[in-house]
Amino acid sequence: MPLFVERNKELDIAFGYESGEMERLLRNHISRAINEPTWKLQKVTAKDVGILREENKKMVSLVRAEFSDALGFVTPSNMFYSLTMKFRRENGKWIITR
Image 1 (cartoon, rainbow, N blue to C red):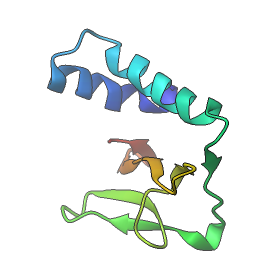
Image 2 (cartoon, rainbow, N blue to C red):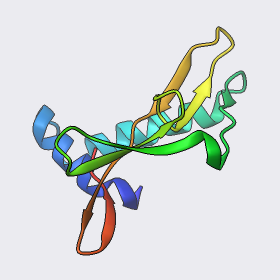
Image 3 (cartoon, rainbow, N blue to C red):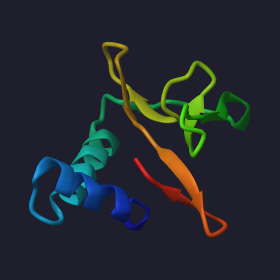
């Protein structure tokens, strides 16, 4: 969760939530995916993952080869449940932005 602090704070403001609400929602979202016994973590290898430069040329997304999110789960009905991660570089560090 510490990696998502900036993202969660911005989304709390954007959606008019109380401070900390997006962290709670994200934690629940990830916990649900991890703890759902019928969902399987999508197997990904290093060759399947790449970086996609966003149109504004200031951010990148971590994506799978078929341009879907790199972190995701497959449900029994073959739906893909995923978490989007966008990064920006600031002061020599990559920061999760969205």
